[in-house]
Image (cartoon, rainbow, N blue to C red; front, side, top):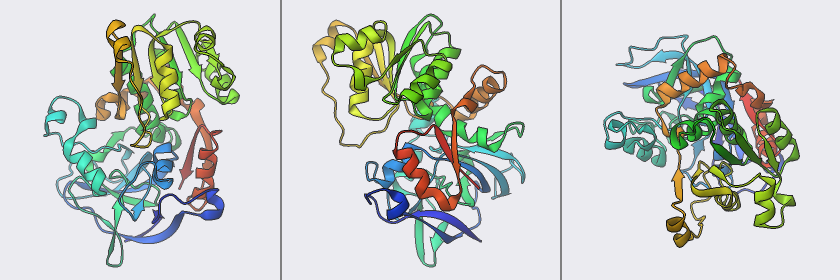
Length: 374
């Protein structure tokens, strides 16, 4: 079949993207689903910095590629061996397909799935196949999802079935923003009632982390961002202290504005200065956790004596450090019960043809969780 899709052929094209138009909407050919695969109709696809990082070259991927990794969709057709989904089911995409058999998967850490990581690096589905092409030219899949398109073929291992009692606009948030941000707090930090936390970077992932810290009973939550607008929203969502680092001149001023050091410092911006800020805010014996994905060349110089003398921890968190098939359902239930109000994170919507304008809005730093609505 044919479908319209967002195709990237060259990384590092300068913005504004509304003028340079690095992402081209074109009609591509989509093969039927193979064994263990599903044909889906994309309903909503979130605009995330991970996609922007491919466009600007910070996160190189095999080209040409159909972008997009956060989405909610409807099942159209199932391939051989897929017996637990049927046409009309609603699903949320997961950007690391898990085989269920490798060492990390069997230890309950599907985010670290080895075949899944290899497939994502190569631009294939979990099976190693590519289902997108233009004539004889095969196109790469973005994290096995490629949801900036009207239709996609994905591995069954890339989707989580959900109930149809929330909108696709809401559901799409749970595939990356909520899964990543809330998971870092709940699964990786295991934050408990009475703990303190700082969240650096208030995009969709950071605000999801803040909501999870609030739901977990943190007694002090420090929100850190260069946008005063986002800081005010953070206060509405539960932040007790607001810090704009652009107005901070010293580490002492930073700690004073934050009300002191915290048990858990979260870097959700994916930039070295953000990680440094989260580290400075972390207390003796505390943990600094990063879920951001900066340029692979980014480095941070660790003060080893301080790490030993203060028993510091530095942790990475990917895909929410949990089991998406379980966590997405749990987080949606928390949302429906009013304990995780992720609808407050919804930003602007764009059509597929407006995708370059959408990435400009994302790059400006002023957006919440914008989305492509198909």
